[in-house]
Length: 192
Image (tube, rainbow, N blue to C red; front, side, top):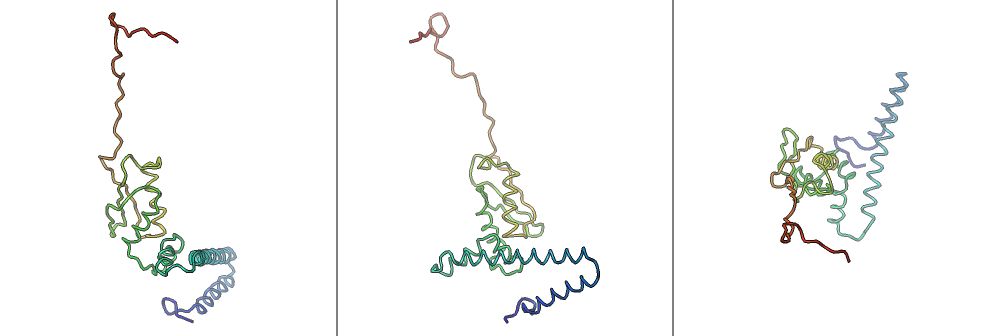
């Protein structure tokens, strides 16, 4: 079998998981043993879903070029999150941030990322507010949700205020003066 990161192959990893579960069972802490088994089941479901998604993406059009298939895999939130989790995603952080922002249901772009703090500043790219009826908080949350899969290095998202794009107070007046007749009143109208 081919080696997995850290020099451990799949067979050894499987045996290690079984040994740990056996040790927990032997320790007599039923709750800890059940929690560990539930954790293993959840992880298996997570990875199984990732493999199923990858096979689905690759199988949709088996004749497409390798580059397109690769992009489909890298652009999928579940597959990308697994690749990032294991340090296998081939894109750097700025590329993954851009990929994630393209999936946000609001028109935003990066205004800068600080790797030291994990803060990503965003700005709206369309005028007229956040779009789609979104509030500032909704835009930030949508970005955080997608970034969690593609770029977990981003730990904070801040939507910058843009003075040009902030809503302008609309002044509503009484309207233009109505034409007046000789008495200074509006002319009388007759009903048909």
